[in-house]
Length: 395
Image (cartoon, rainbow, N blue to C red; front, side, top):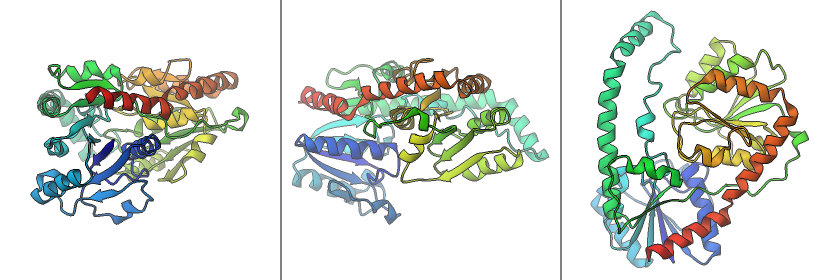
């Protein structure tokens, strides 16, 4: 089978979860005899191409993605010259790539997020960190207007998502979600099933091979890995939680790996509130070494789809903590057995459960073992079997 993966960015695994998953799927599909190709948008930052891509990485010469006629001509020629059988649109959540579906080959659109995630981005739009008088006034005005603004924004966002999903249904041979538990969320936008389009869940595979971990070598580290972005990942909440815990747990530390648009704001909050033992490590190429040492892997996101950082941490025996605010959360975490699912945005409950485990070494050991066992369910070979089954279903 000749397969073309499409995305806005080059498929450099250091750039993000979608790129990392695609790199992993590609290598596994190659071993099963498939020919893989990559196509990405116009690249301004050439450093993103500094990776030994396992397959040809084609790049559009012009901006505008598939809205540019010259790009579209290049795209059609690429399909023809490489005799492409399947297109896998890895940006199925965003309509910027919709026109990539306007070709006469088999098309799969992958939604790498919670289908409702755009409706959750406004959870914390009120800035509670700035204390000057002007900001306080703005904050009060926002609170007064917030219910009405939220209603208007949600209504517009709902219609935007609905229109996009209807387009995917009409143009794709298959739409892949990250879990079958997202089917209800997807159809909640008044999307009607189409007998010509398969809609099903296929989770992302774990990025790492199973790690040999000695629990006794685990360190007293609470780890965050991901983008430092408050509107979606919201690590600000984790700083608030740590502020409640660090005085009572002087032998523990919080480590944040990653960068992003909210980095300066988060660092300023730590400095202003004199929060101790917080380490911002920046983006790291060797994230595995952090997972191997950490006891917990924590997320406090407004929205998630299939958080790779939880799976990667669990593979290394980290106990996962997450808000139970996305349908696939219970696919990953069996609450109280291999990790903790917290009622959405209840940071006191989050801190209390984290504090209890920080002071219970034997229970941490049991949950660490259970977390690593759970991660094996998403071994790449099991996931590739699901993809090959999908190819057969479409054909």
